[in-house]
Amino acid sequence: MPETKPVSLVLTSRQGTEETVQHLRGDIVRRSDTLYIRYEEPEPGPDGAKTRTMMKISGNELKIMRHGGVEAEQTFRSGCRVPGFYRSPFTRFSLSTDTLKLESRWDGAAGQVVWQYDLYVFEELSGRFELSLHIQEDV
Image (cartoon, rainbow, N blue to C red; front, top):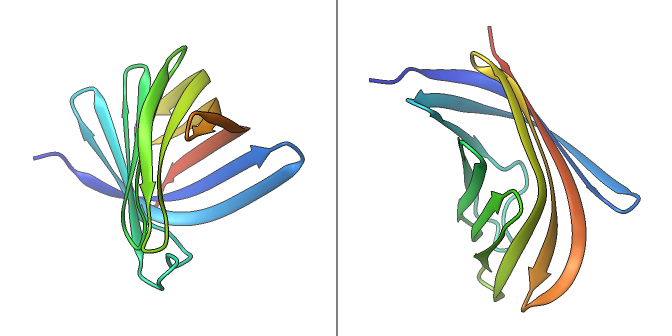
């Protein structure tokens, strides 16, 4: 059975001149060549419910799945445009991500994932985003 390890996460998101930094606590599990990172989002969803996030990192793909107050799925694969969705109690829409860069480096349960993508909502460009996720095993 794969071992679950507690981790500290720093998620930085940039769009244009806007930057958001979140400090999170979660868990990481490695199953063969795939890493799973789970955490609870600090802000409640639009209806006040909690949202749990699972990130799946394998090979040249990153998939983010959100459940709870918000239901969403985004997949990032370098050089590809991939469909996804976003649903909350108040809105729902189709989206797609066109990933320009996806890089990851690992040393055990510690590492970094960096990705850049164009977000399309209803087939219209919504913006370019640059994200970095730093993972550090809690001791």
